Every structure is written in structure tokens, then in C-alpha cells.
Image (cartoon, rainbow, N blue to C red):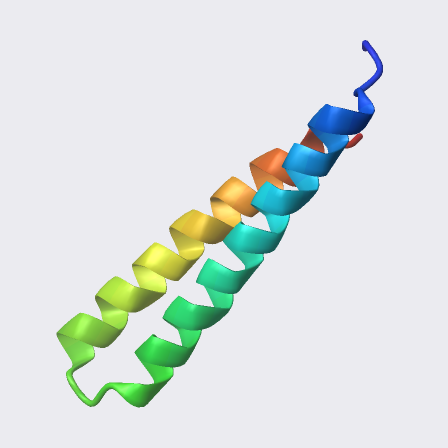
Length: 61
């Protein structure tokens, strides 16, 4: 596997930070809404961002 440049590593770090924030935001929204349908959608969105985070993190390995 080719080595990641400093610029790519910085961009990857920024993306990981953004995805982590989105995961936390949608989890919080899911926990604070009383509508089960909306809560389920927020949880689904949080899980999608977790998948993005995991895919990005795998690029570091």
C-alpha cells in the first residue's frame, strides 16, 4: 500500500472529525425526540455516518 501524504492525512483527519460530530449529533437527536419514526430515522442516519467513519478510518491501516 502506498504511503499517505501529510496533506492527505490532514484531510482524512478533518473528515473523521466531521463524521464523528455527525454521529454524535444524530444520536443525540434520536435520544431527544419523542416521535419513534423520527428517532429511528435519526438513528439510521447516525449509523450511516458511523459507516463513513469506519471506511475512512480503514484508510489509515
